[in-house]
Amino acid sequence: MNTGCLNLNRGGEYAIAALTRLALETREPGKLIAVRVLAEIQGIPKSFLSKILEQCLRKGLIASKSGAGGGVALAKPAAEISLLDILEACEGPYHRADCVFYGGRKCEGPDCVVFCPLREREEDVRASLARTTLAEMARSLEVHPLNDSPKMEQKTGTTDAARRAQGGR
Image 1 (cartoon, rainbow, N blue to C red):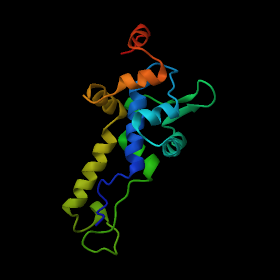
Image 2 (image 1 turned 90 degrees about the vertical axis):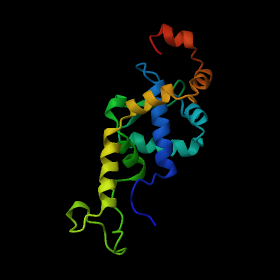
Image 3 (image 1 turned 180 degrees about the vertical axis):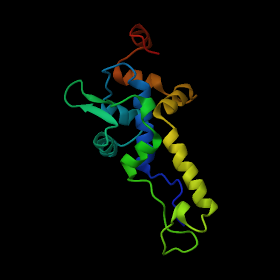
């Protein structure tokens, strides 16, 4: 039964993962990450990631540059991009499913005379997604014990010493 509560499809999950990695790796102004590299690091098929990134580009979440030395980066600060922004860019507008009590009827949400606890939780999830930013996700990824940033550095040719010399982490 699809209740309409948080149910991410693969595209939404990949988008959050890829944009979180971009937030972490493109802190330096003008730094771009090649889509091929991002796909490799995140373990996402490049063709699928390209489609996801195209949706994010259309919604103004990322910027891209083609050609030699091209790639992608966030179009605005990570603190200004919410998980809800990303999910709606990739999965469409956040909406309620049918009423859990009467399957053929759309959920009326807070306007319903029987606003069920499930819909209250759905509203909580929506608000939480809107509050959670890519900056928070990047901070979490940065300290995650499985973070594989050294692999990103190998793919991009950036060393720890070079990153520190440029004022990076």
